[in-house]
Length: 479
Image (spheres, rainbow, N blue to C red):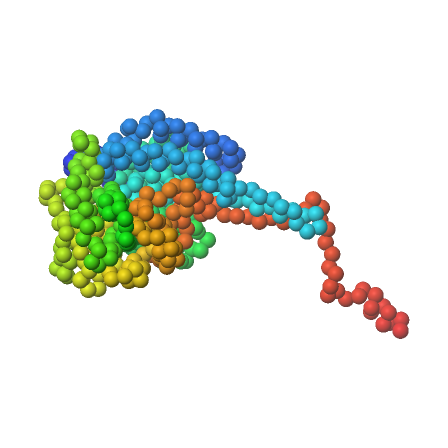
C-alpha cells in the first residue's frame, strides 16, 4: 500500500492536498542522470530558462499566492509578496552570479594567464521550511540552477502543496524534469536525502537544532557543501526614540509579522527602565488592534494562525512557563478556538525571570527586558548563542556605531525592523544561526566552486638552481 502525505489548511482544518511519499533513491538518480546535460548548456541558456520561469510564476501569481495562503495560513496579501519575491529572485541571482562567480582572467608571469572560473557541485539537495515555503527554497534553487547544478528539493511536510507547485512551474518554464526533482515526504525522507551518497551538497533552511544535527552528520563528508540558514533569538533595542509611535510600529512588525514565524522576528524587546512606559503602552494598544483571521478574510488580517495545533500548544506552554517563572504579561497569548492554531500577539515582561532560556519561540510572543543603561542593553542583546538579526530603534549615529560594533549578528539594522532583509544583499547569521554560508545575494558563493588555472600557449620550463654540473664528473676524471 502506498504511503500518503496529507496537508491541511491551518485556518480551517480542511484537507488541501495529498500525495504519495517519494522514493529518495529514485529522485537522486533522476537528478544525477540529468545533471551533466544541464551543466553543459551555455550559461545564457540556463539564464534564459530561469527568466522564463519568472514569467511563468508572474502569470500564475494569483493561483500560487492562494495555495501559499491556504497551506501556511498567512494572509493572502502576504502570500502575494512571497510570490513577488520568487519572481524577483531570478534577476537578483543572475546579477549575483555575474558579480561573484563570473569568469575572470589576468596576466601572469612570462606571458602566462591566470584564469578563475567556477564549476557546479553536481546534485544539490534542498530542504525547505514551512514559513516561506516558496521564497526560501527558491532562494537556493534558482542560484543552484544558474550555476549548473541539478536539485532534489524536499519541501516541508507541512507545506508539500506549495513545494510541488513550485517545481511544476520550473518544469513548465522549460527546466528539464530531471534537473529539478520534488521529493515528497517527512523527516525520514529528509534524513535519507541528507545522508544520500548521491548528493554533492545540502542547502538547508530550518531550526537551529536540525541544523546542528546536519553539521555533525556532514563532519565526515568535507567534500560536500553544506549551507545552513537557521533561526534566531533576535533582539530589538528601543532607546531614546523620539517617535514612540513609530518605534511601537516597528516592534509590532518585527515581532508579529507572519504570526512571528520568521527567523528574523524580534523575540526580545530591550528598553530603558523608567523610560519604557509610553512605548510599551503604545505597543500593547497596537497589538490589541492587530486583526488575526483566516487568509482570505475581509478586512484583511495582519496575521493568520501559526502552522498547526502542535505549534500553538507548544507556544502556549512556553508562555505559561515564562509566567510561572515570574514573567508579567502585558498582553496575554489568547487562543479563541481550541481546535485551531490562531494565537493573538502576546507581550510579556521577563525582566525578573531568572536564567531565561536562550531559545527561539517561533510564534507571536515578544519578551520585554528592562535595563538601566545602554551598556546593559548591549550586554542583554548579546546574551544569546544565536546571531541572526538585531535592530536598534532610536539613538544617535554614534550610539548606532557602538551598537553595530558590539552586536554579533549577520543582519544589524538601525531604525528598521529586525525582519524584511533585502534580497540584493547577503543574508545569514553567526553563532548557531548559520555556518558562515550567507544566502540571498551571496547564495552564488555556495552554488559553485572556484577553479584557478595558470595557462600558457606554449610549454616553457627550466630549472635554474639545485642541479649538478653535468660536466663536473668528467672534469674530475680528466684531472
